[in-house]
Length: 331
Image (cartoon, rainbow, N blue to C red):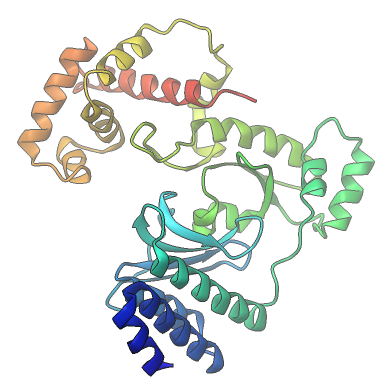
Protein backbone atom coordinates (compact mmCIF):
# COMPACT_ATOMS: atom_id res chain seq x y z
CA UNK A 1 0.00 0.00 0.00
CA UNK A 2 2.86 2.39 0.87
CA UNK A 3 4.60 1.74 -2.47
CA UNK A 4 1.32 2.32 -4.33
CA UNK A 5 0.79 5.59 -2.45
CA UNK A 6 4.27 6.77 -3.41
CA UNK A 7 3.69 5.95 -7.09
CA UNK A 8 0.27 7.67 -7.05
CA UNK A 9 1.72 10.74 -5.36
CA UNK A 10 4.14 11.13 -8.25
CA UNK A 11 1.16 11.30 -10.62
CA UNK A 12 -1.45 12.99 -8.43
CA UNK A 13 -0.61 14.46 -5.03
CA UNK A 14 -4.21 14.36 -3.81
CA UNK A 15 -4.68 10.74 -4.86
CA UNK A 16 -1.50 9.69 -3.11
CA UNK A 17 -2.46 11.55 0.05
CA UNK A 18 -5.96 10.08 0.02
CA UNK A 19 -4.56 6.57 -0.27
CA UNK A 20 -2.29 7.19 2.70
CA UNK A 21 -5.32 8.38 4.67
CA UNK A 22 -7.21 5.17 3.81
CA UNK A 23 -4.26 3.03 4.85
CA UNK A 24 -3.81 4.97 8.09
CA UNK A 25 -7.39 4.62 9.30
CA UNK A 26 -7.67 1.02 8.10
CA UNK A 27 -4.68 0.31 10.32
CA UNK A 28 -6.32 1.99 13.30
CA UNK A 29 -9.50 -0.02 12.76
CA UNK A 30 -7.63 -3.31 12.45
CA UNK A 31 -5.80 -2.59 15.70
CA UNK A 32 -9.05 -1.56 17.44
CA UNK A 33 -7.68 1.93 18.25
CA UNK A 34 -9.73 4.18 20.52
CA UNK A 35 -11.46 7.47 19.80
CA UNK A 36 -8.51 9.57 20.99
CA UNK A 37 -6.22 7.89 18.47
CA UNK A 38 -8.75 8.30 15.65
CA UNK A 39 -9.32 12.01 16.32
CA UNK A 40 -5.56 12.49 16.76
CA UNK A 41 -4.99 10.93 13.35
CA UNK A 42 -7.55 13.25 11.78
CA UNK A 43 -5.93 16.31 13.38
CA UNK A 44 -2.37 15.37 12.43
CA UNK A 45 -3.25 14.37 8.86
CA UNK A 46 -5.33 17.50 8.29
CA UNK A 47 -2.87 19.84 10.01
CA UNK A 48 -5.60 21.48 12.12
CA UNK A 49 -7.49 20.68 15.34
CA UNK A 50 -10.09 17.92 15.05
CA UNK A 51 -12.98 17.15 17.39
CA UNK A 52 -15.64 14.51 17.92
CA UNK A 53 -18.82 15.43 19.81
CA UNK A 54 -21.53 12.87 20.54
CA UNK A 55 -24.43 14.32 22.55
CA UNK A 56 -26.29 11.10 23.23
CA UNK A 57 -23.23 9.28 24.54
CA UNK A 58 -21.71 12.39 26.16
CA UNK A 59 -18.44 11.86 24.33
CA UNK A 60 -16.26 14.90 23.54
CA UNK A 61 -12.75 14.52 22.15
CA UNK A 62 -10.60 17.32 20.72
CA UNK A 63 -6.97 17.06 19.58
CA UNK A 64 -4.65 19.77 18.26
CA UNK A 65 -2.56 19.32 15.07
CA UNK A 66 0.47 18.33 17.14
CA UNK A 67 -1.49 15.33 18.43
CA UNK A 68 -2.14 16.63 21.93
CA UNK A 69 -5.49 16.46 23.70
CA UNK A 70 -6.99 19.97 23.76
CA UNK A 71 -10.48 19.91 25.30
CA UNK A 72 -12.73 22.85 24.43
CA UNK A 73 -16.32 23.07 25.81
CA UNK A 74 -17.39 25.82 23.40
CA UNK A 75 -19.70 24.83 20.53
CA UNK A 76 -18.04 24.03 17.20
CA UNK A 77 -18.24 26.61 14.44
CA UNK A 78 -20.91 25.58 11.98
CA UNK A 79 -18.72 26.67 9.07
CA UNK A 80 -16.02 24.09 9.92
CA UNK A 81 -15.55 21.02 7.75
CA UNK A 82 -17.67 18.28 9.31
CA UNK A 83 -19.48 15.02 8.88
CA UNK A 84 -22.35 13.56 10.88
CA UNK A 85 -21.83 10.29 12.73
CA UNK A 86 -25.58 9.71 13.18
CA UNK A 87 -28.53 10.79 11.07
CA UNK A 88 -30.06 13.21 13.60
CA UNK A 89 -26.91 15.35 13.74
CA UNK A 90 -26.34 14.80 17.48
CA UNK A 91 -22.87 13.34 16.83
CA UNK A 92 -20.34 15.00 14.54
CA UNK A 93 -16.69 14.86 13.58
CA UNK A 94 -15.16 18.24 12.68
CA UNK A 95 -11.94 19.57 11.26
CA UNK A 96 -11.53 23.10 12.60
CA UNK A 97 -11.05 24.60 9.16
CA UNK A 98 -13.65 26.64 7.30
CA UNK A 99 -14.78 26.12 3.73
CA UNK A 100 -15.64 23.11 1.64
CA UNK A 101 -13.43 20.05 2.26
CA UNK A 102 -10.90 19.30 -0.44
CA UNK A 103 -10.32 15.72 -1.62
CA UNK A 104 -7.91 14.94 1.22
CA UNK A 105 -10.01 16.54 3.98
CA UNK A 106 -13.12 14.76 2.67
CA UNK A 107 -11.29 11.44 2.81
CA UNK A 108 -10.03 12.16 6.34
CA UNK A 109 -13.55 12.94 7.52
CA UNK A 110 -15.02 9.87 5.82
CA UNK A 111 -12.46 7.36 7.07
CA UNK A 112 -12.16 8.84 10.57
CA UNK A 113 -15.95 8.91 10.92
CA UNK A 114 -16.22 5.26 9.87
CA UNK A 115 -13.56 4.23 12.37
CA UNK A 116 -15.19 6.31 15.13
CA UNK A 117 -18.64 4.78 14.52
CA UNK A 118 -17.17 1.32 14.89
CA UNK A 119 -15.57 2.26 18.22
CA UNK A 120 -18.72 3.90 19.57
CA UNK A 121 -20.89 0.95 18.62
CA UNK A 122 -18.40 -1.52 20.08
CA UNK A 123 -17.61 0.23 23.37
CA UNK A 124 -20.65 2.34 24.21
CA UNK A 125 -23.53 0.76 22.33
CA UNK A 126 -25.58 2.38 19.63
CA UNK A 127 -27.24 5.70 20.27
CA UNK A 128 -30.92 5.12 20.95
CA UNK A 129 -32.95 5.18 17.76
CA UNK A 130 -35.48 7.98 18.23
CA UNK A 131 -38.45 8.27 15.91
CA UNK A 132 -38.69 11.97 14.92
CA UNK A 133 -42.45 11.61 14.55
CA UNK A 134 -42.77 10.50 18.18
CA UNK A 135 -40.62 13.41 19.35
CA UNK A 136 -42.81 15.84 17.39
CA UNK A 137 -45.87 14.23 18.96
CA UNK A 138 -44.65 14.40 22.54
CA UNK A 139 -43.87 18.14 22.31
CA UNK A 140 -47.15 18.98 20.56
CA UNK A 141 -49.53 20.70 23.05
CA UNK A 142 -52.52 19.96 20.82
CA UNK A 143 -51.99 16.19 21.00
CA UNK A 144 -54.19 14.35 23.53
CA UNK A 145 -52.41 13.70 26.81
CA UNK A 146 -52.92 9.92 26.59
CA UNK A 147 -51.35 9.89 23.10
CA UNK A 148 -48.35 11.87 24.34
CA UNK A 149 -48.08 9.54 27.35
CA UNK A 150 -47.95 6.51 25.04
CA UNK A 151 -45.27 8.24 22.95
CA UNK A 152 -43.22 8.75 26.12
CA UNK A 153 -43.52 5.03 26.91
CA UNK A 154 -42.44 4.11 23.38
CA UNK A 155 -39.45 6.46 23.65
CA UNK A 156 -38.63 4.90 27.05
CA UNK A 157 -38.77 8.21 28.87
CA UNK A 158 -38.78 7.67 32.63
CA UNK A 159 -41.61 9.40 34.49
CA UNK A 160 -39.24 10.44 37.28
CA UNK A 161 -36.55 11.68 34.88
CA UNK A 162 -36.41 15.26 33.68
CA UNK A 163 -35.82 16.14 30.04
CA UNK A 164 -35.23 19.27 28.00
CA UNK A 165 -36.93 19.91 24.69
CA UNK A 166 -34.63 21.31 22.02
CA UNK A 167 -35.86 23.43 19.12
CA UNK A 168 -33.74 23.31 15.96
CA UNK A 169 -34.40 24.53 12.41
CA UNK A 170 -34.58 20.87 11.40
CA UNK A 171 -37.05 19.84 14.09
CA UNK A 172 -37.35 19.02 17.82
CA UNK A 173 -34.97 16.90 19.84
CA UNK A 174 -35.02 15.62 23.43
CA UNK A 175 -32.08 15.66 25.82
CA UNK A 176 -31.90 14.47 29.37
CA UNK A 177 -31.59 17.30 31.89
CA UNK A 178 -27.87 16.81 32.52
CA UNK A 179 -26.98 16.86 28.81
CA UNK A 180 -29.05 19.99 28.23
CA UNK A 181 -27.29 21.82 31.04
CA UNK A 182 -23.71 20.97 30.21
CA UNK A 183 -21.21 20.76 27.39
CA UNK A 184 -23.08 17.93 25.67
CA UNK A 185 -24.94 20.49 23.56
CA UNK A 186 -21.87 21.42 21.52
CA UNK A 187 -22.90 19.29 18.53
CA UNK A 188 -26.44 20.59 18.23
CA UNK A 189 -25.73 23.41 15.80
CA UNK A 190 -28.13 26.36 16.06
CA UNK A 191 -30.63 25.46 18.78
CA UNK A 192 -32.81 26.70 21.62
CA UNK A 193 -33.03 24.62 24.79
CA UNK A 194 -36.08 24.57 27.04
CA UNK A 195 -36.18 24.06 30.82
CA UNK A 196 -35.90 20.61 32.42
CA UNK A 197 -39.34 19.06 32.93
CA UNK A 198 -41.09 15.73 33.38
CA UNK A 199 -42.16 14.01 30.13
CA UNK A 200 -45.77 15.21 30.51
CA UNK A 201 -44.59 18.85 30.50
CA UNK A 202 -42.41 18.63 27.39
CA UNK A 203 -44.80 20.80 25.29
CA UNK A 204 -44.13 23.65 27.76
CA UNK A 205 -40.38 23.07 27.51
CA UNK A 206 -40.57 23.02 23.71
CA UNK A 207 -42.51 26.29 23.58
CA UNK A 208 -39.76 27.90 25.63
CA UNK A 209 -37.10 26.26 23.45
CA UNK A 210 -38.67 27.80 20.33
CA UNK A 211 -38.39 31.22 21.93
CA UNK A 212 -34.74 30.54 22.79
CA UNK A 213 -34.08 29.43 19.20
CA UNK A 214 -35.02 32.89 17.96
CA UNK A 215 -32.21 34.33 20.11
CA UNK A 216 -29.68 31.79 18.75
CA UNK A 217 -27.34 33.21 16.12
CA UNK A 218 -26.26 31.73 12.81
CA UNK A 219 -22.66 32.30 13.89
CA UNK A 220 -21.84 34.19 10.68
CA UNK A 221 -20.43 37.66 10.06
CA UNK A 222 -24.00 38.87 9.42
CA UNK A 223 -25.35 37.21 12.57
CA UNK A 224 -22.62 36.79 15.21
CA UNK A 225 -23.37 35.36 18.61
CA UNK A 226 -24.05 32.09 20.46
CA UNK A 227 -25.52 29.28 18.35
CA UNK A 228 -27.09 27.55 21.37
CA UNK A 229 -29.30 29.49 23.79
CA UNK A 230 -31.00 28.19 26.93
CA UNK A 231 -34.37 29.72 27.72
CA UNK A 232 -33.53 29.91 31.43
CA UNK A 233 -30.61 32.21 30.68
CA UNK A 234 -32.74 34.75 28.80
CA UNK A 235 -34.59 36.06 31.84
CA UNK A 236 -36.58 39.18 30.97
CA UNK A 237 -35.13 39.24 27.45
CA UNK A 238 -37.61 36.50 26.56
CA UNK A 239 -40.36 39.13 26.70
CA UNK A 240 -38.86 40.78 23.61
CA UNK A 241 -40.04 37.77 21.60
CA UNK A 242 -43.63 38.88 22.24
CA UNK A 243 -43.04 42.17 20.42
CA UNK A 244 -44.71 42.24 16.98
CA UNK A 245 -42.20 42.17 14.12
CA UNK A 246 -44.03 45.15 12.67
CA UNK A 247 -43.31 47.32 15.72
CA UNK A 248 -41.20 50.39 14.95
CA UNK A 249 -38.03 50.41 17.06
CA UNK A 250 -35.95 53.58 16.53
CA UNK A 251 -32.83 52.05 18.09
CA UNK A 252 -33.07 49.12 15.67
CA UNK A 253 -33.28 51.52 12.73
CA UNK A 254 -30.23 53.35 14.07
CA UNK A 255 -28.37 50.07 14.47
CA UNK A 256 -29.13 48.98 10.90
CA UNK A 257 -28.02 52.41 9.66
CA UNK A 258 -24.71 52.02 11.51
CA UNK A 259 -24.17 48.46 10.24
CA UNK A 260 -24.65 49.64 6.65
CA UNK A 261 -21.58 51.87 7.02
CA UNK A 262 -19.15 48.97 6.95
CA UNK A 263 -18.69 45.26 7.79
CA UNK A 264 -16.62 46.12 10.87
CA UNK A 265 -19.48 47.90 12.67
CA UNK A 266 -21.56 44.85 13.61
CA UNK A 267 -18.60 42.79 14.79
CA UNK A 268 -17.32 45.75 16.82
CA UNK A 269 -20.66 46.47 18.50
CA UNK A 270 -21.38 42.80 19.15
CA UNK A 271 -17.96 42.24 20.72
CA UNK A 272 -18.40 45.33 22.90
CA UNK A 273 -21.91 44.34 24.01
CA UNK A 274 -20.78 40.78 24.80
CA UNK A 275 -17.51 41.52 26.63
CA UNK A 276 -16.92 42.66 30.19
CA UNK A 277 -14.61 45.49 29.13
CA UNK A 278 -13.26 47.41 26.14
CA UNK A 279 -9.97 45.59 26.47
CA UNK A 280 -11.73 42.22 26.55
CA UNK A 281 -13.71 43.10 23.43
CA UNK A 282 -10.54 44.23 21.65
CA UNK A 283 -8.86 40.94 22.56
CA UNK A 284 -11.82 38.97 21.22
CA UNK A 285 -11.44 40.73 17.84
CA UNK A 286 -7.63 40.56 17.99
CA UNK A 287 -7.37 44.33 17.77
CA UNK A 288 -5.15 46.77 19.61
CA UNK A 289 -6.98 48.47 22.47
CA UNK A 290 -6.61 51.95 20.94
CA UNK A 291 -7.81 50.73 17.52
CA UNK A 292 -10.90 49.24 19.12
CA UNK A 293 -11.60 52.47 21.00
CA UNK A 294 -11.45 54.38 17.71
CA UNK A 295 -13.93 51.95 16.17
CA UNK A 296 -16.31 52.34 19.10
CA UNK A 297 -16.13 56.13 18.79
CA UNK A 298 -17.02 55.89 15.08
CA UNK A 299 -19.83 53.42 15.83
CA UNK A 300 -21.26 55.75 18.47
CA UNK A 301 -21.32 58.56 15.92
CA UNK A 302 -23.15 56.31 13.46
CA UNK A 303 -25.63 55.09 16.07
CA UNK A 304 -26.37 58.51 17.49
CA UNK A 305 -25.94 57.55 21.15
CA UNK A 306 -23.00 56.69 23.44
CA UNK A 307 -22.57 53.03 24.29
CA UNK A 308 -19.79 53.30 26.87
CA UNK A 309 -22.12 54.20 29.73
CA UNK A 310 -24.47 51.61 31.31
CA UNK A 311 -27.65 53.09 29.78
CA UNK A 312 -26.19 53.27 26.28
CA UNK A 313 -24.76 49.76 26.53
CA UNK A 314 -28.17 48.42 27.55
CA UNK A 315 -29.77 50.15 24.55
CA UNK A 316 -27.20 48.53 22.30
CA UNK A 317 -27.74 45.07 23.80
CA UNK A 318 -31.50 45.37 23.37
CA UNK A 319 -31.15 46.60 19.79
CA UNK A 320 -28.87 43.66 18.96
CA UNK A 321 -31.32 41.21 20.55
CA UNK A 322 -34.27 42.66 18.62
CA UNK A 323 -32.25 42.52 15.39
CA UNK A 324 -31.64 38.81 15.94
CA UNK A 325 -35.33 38.22 16.64
CA UNK A 326 -36.24 39.97 13.39
CA UNK A 327 -33.75 37.75 11.53
CA UNK A 328 -35.37 34.66 13.05
CA UNK A 329 -39.13 35.26 13.13
CA UNK A 330 -41.50 32.94 14.95
CA UNK A 331 -42.67 30.04 12.82
